[in-house]
Image (cartoon, rainbow, N blue to C red; front, side, top):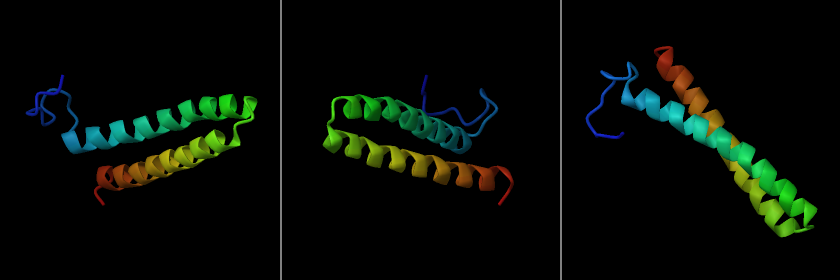
Length: 78
């Protein structure tokens, strides 16, 4: 329910913090999902697709780490 006006009054979490939490969770979920896709491609011996998914998985992991670092800094007051 995105109303565009919720600023933490309802959830108790400021939008920017919530957005970072959501982003990290989405990146981690994507990395997990891509593992299944990599295994599917490998089973079909499609190295081109498996390589694409590995690169995408690495990007998702990198995004998650970057998001966690920023969130950690923001929540600790840094």
